Image (cartoon, rainbow, N blue to C red; front, side, top):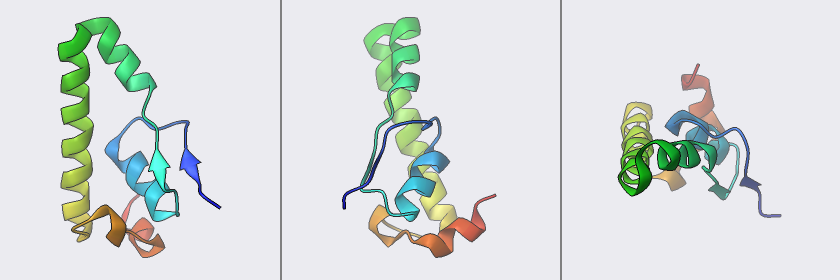
Amino acid sequence: MTVMMDSGIRRGTDVIKALALGAKACFVGRPFNYASAVGGTSGVEWAIDLITNEVSRDLGMLGAPLLTDLSEKHLRLIK
C-alpha cells in the first residue's frame, strides 16, 4: 500500500521522519499557505528553498546522500 503523509509537516525533519518510516510522499501545505499570505509568490519561493535546503542539510547530517537511502535506522539519530 502506498502511504502519503498529509498532515503535520512543518520542517525538513518532519519530511525525513515520514519518509524513513515508509511514506512515499509528503504534502507540505500550511507553511506554503502562510508564505503566500505574507509574501505572495516570492514568499512561496522562499519557503520552497527553505524546506528544500533543510531536507538536504539534514540528510547530510544523517549520512544519507539520497532520500531513498533513508530507513528506520536513521530515526534513532533524530531527537
